[in-house]
Image (cartoon, rainbow, N blue to C red; front, side):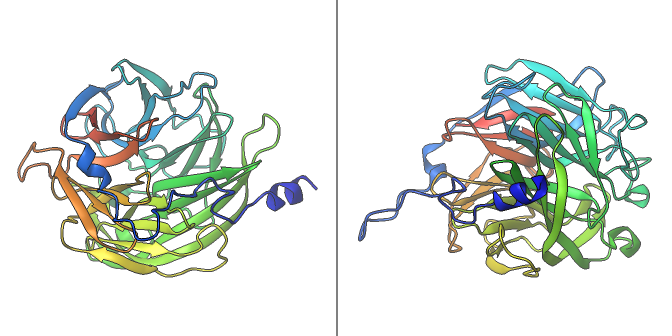
Amino acid sequence: MKLRACSNALATTALTLGLAAAASPAGAADPPPFLDRLHTVSAVASTVPENGDVNPYGTFTIQESVGDLHRGNVLISNFNNSANLQGTGTTLVQVTPGGSRTTFATIDPNNLPGPCPGGVGLTTALTVLPGGWVVVGSLPTADGTSDTAQAGCLLVLDRHGVVRETIAGDGINGPWDMTAVSTGKRSELFVTNVLNGTVAGGGAEVDRGTVLRITLCTEDDQPPQRVATTEIGSGFPERTDPAALVVGPTGVGLGHDGTLFVADAVLSRITAIPHAVARTDSAGIGRVVTEGGGLNAPLGLAIAPRGDILTVNGGDGNIVETTPEGRQVASKQINNEGTPPGAGALFGLALDLDRDAVYFVNDADNALDVLH
């Protein structure tokens, strides 16, 4: 009976999901791009915790204060350990807008409440569900190389940073990025996976990346339980990479009409999976929204207030704004470190609480920055 009540709580309209966007009056000119109002990049804080973890990936702005999570702060996951080995980072840090950093969690891979094949290496897949349940992806390695990468899992932490549950198997294979929507007791996670045949491919492109919708039900003060897994996207290109460990479908964001936008890093494009909240089958890669142009291995993805798609490039230091119809309307350089400038520095991004600035991790400096 509890499962049925949770299942029936799903709302499929954009309005009920809180995704409705303000429409322009008939005949009105399109509003200027969101990025046009942002002009300055400022450093917020180092993301390096006490144990020395580096390579910040996941970035999430906390919406409500509960437990040790504080509204308006930014939660960040680290992918590398202090020796800079990829897929071995175990920490989540919390940064205030004023630049103070605290460690929210240090996860012991040898003391997990359930299976997580390969251990812990925290990825860009990061969200906070109602009640302060933190969900973060793990794509672990034994030695920082793709040869030892394993399937990993999703880790569920409570509001105090304690791992209470693992979600593994049933299609979860290298969870790389994630977004979520919740209504009532039900949450939908949209998770990209990048290890389906990738390691065996030995660096060759393998078109087997997936997007899963994982349905969770929360009852009382118990950790959310998985009640369903649906593959809604498939056939995305992916490959191993010595610098980035793996390249494949990364950032995801839910549009105002329930379309899920996916950043395809291998082919430098954005695709769209329609009816992502309710569909019962795979749309393949979906519709190609835009490709090439200012996109250069897009990684992190977020949805701007009026529905435009924001992506940051892994191949340079730019953030790009694209309309849902596919017009690339703005691009700004937000990192110029390294050779070529900005390459490999950007990954996760998130709007601030007021939705008028963009937080992003700077992997070149192991820091959180803000475009405002």
